[in-house]
Image (cartoon, rainbow, N blue to C red; front, side, top):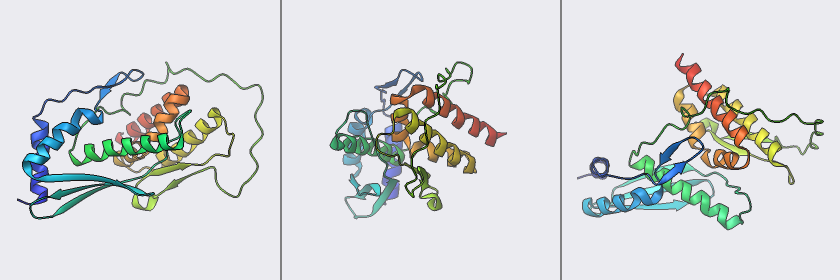
Length: 233
């Protein structure tokens, strides 16, 4: 039996296994799978079928290498790395957050674990509160020779965002940068698949945005939803 056939058998077996979603997003009102909800089941199935999965990280990519322990054939699942800047966290804690997210998404991709469509759950525009008007506009930061934000990996359609801000940038300015560069990405998306890549490959950035500026997060999720509906129409 090839590694591809074994992986397919493992997916089917996992689908018949009862798994409970322990994660809860109170804001959007949906549950989601955490690593501990499915990893023990997958490891048991892999051990029975004869597969071994190993996750590794580099500065650019995270990889899940699934090997057939009998014939040595391999399937590799790859995801572009992203940055985490959790409020009040040390660099090693941010690194741990990135690696935990990557492990979860790699295994979900490999095992075809389906979850709630976060974009479609975005609330309508009316309930979203508007930010309070500023007394006066802040002066633009001095030019540094670098754009404040950009899309990386676009040629491979990875839709990986990198948001760069000057030291001392406050939450509102950072949120504005995230919103602006994401809207550029949505404008260039040519399909619903592109939109989903833009969201899932930058989930860490959007999770930070939700934690630090919920109003901007709500408005941005509505932009995703509107972009999907426009492509459907």
